[in-house]
Length: 540
Image (tube, rainbow, N blue to C red; front, top):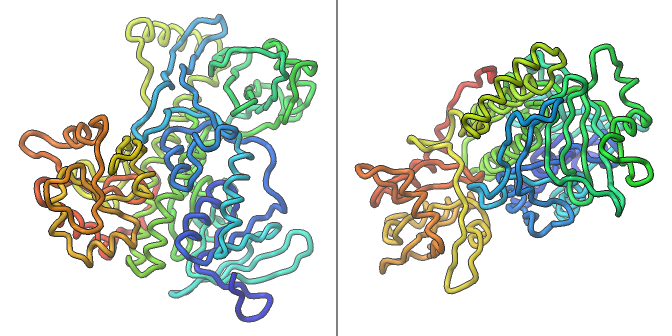
């Protein structure tokens, strides 16, 4: 890291406060683009115990983008190809949620993973980057900014030593109690959802066998959750009951007492940790304040019932990293960053509210309310055998166009030049692509536009060589027809879709028909300099 102005002044392109998974991913993405990144975290060492334990196919694709796809790290994350079963206190099935199969991102819909092991892998990748410096044991103090830069005073937690970081941008990825958010004066919207739960992580011994299934016990005597905890681990969560204190619940003896009905004892398992968490539902009312940006739990906080808290944070990182990189490289106006909050908040808030809805079903201890819930859910399940689908929100207002702009793009398997079939991102070296049905549709893309797309890590590819393949275009063979079916589904007989532009964060900029791929590319490139969204409240 370049240091200027004496030993107490650190200069960077971006300062990131918080070195959890979101901060690590941001540092990795920006550092790989050659930007100077300073990361500060108030903890002297990384957190060694599990927190999040589940992720979805979108998260897996994000891991794939940094070289940590699930098939490369089976000791860290494993697929869960099964149901998520909800039962009441009498053992009756209320609903079964299908968590099996693969999602549109090309990976399994559900994985369970060990967060410390994943963070270790991210740490190793960050450490290899000469453009990134990590300072542990420092916390953010006063912040001041002008039209060109932002300064943050950093205080060493162990000694009181002070230094100043000067950068173009400051990202607060420092959790739900974000110091950066508070220093910026950004308001925190609270949905008023508060429940305390004891989280218990167990490493079963060799002789301990229990069902692999993920399940939710909606029992008024003690709502509880039981899920895998990643390779070699299992997690239980137990709700604090009315009249019970956090201190009473958060005892080792209490953890063993609650585990005993499941056959888990000190003789056959290791209690890795137990901790009481307050499940809440909140979000920041703005995600950009001048040169300050928020990401992860600093921007939104949700109960864990949908398993999307950390997933929402890494989606933030993917959206923010490519946009901030484009601004730093002079490829976009900084007004592009005004699209970050509006685009991401729509998705995050939808999952906050969905998680709250699940919690309102799970966290019942009133017998009459639970009886009404059970009767309703059992009847619905018996008649439909269909679980309520989670929301599938696209991006909010921002840099995309048309009826499918802002939707998540699929990822299928393809081949090129007779090679073994692989996922498209692996073949192209990343998710960004202008993809057409026929190669001739790309002949009108100017060399300058192709270069600008390339600098933004957006490649050019076609599903068919129809006799005219421009330089730099990759011909990919749609091995099972995934992409042709997808293009068909995006269009209609009267308005077919022949081209899509997929942004570096896996979302569609837009679609085009016929030979309009040139206009699609030009519209995207022009939009990098014409995004003038008002910094409006994110509250919904």
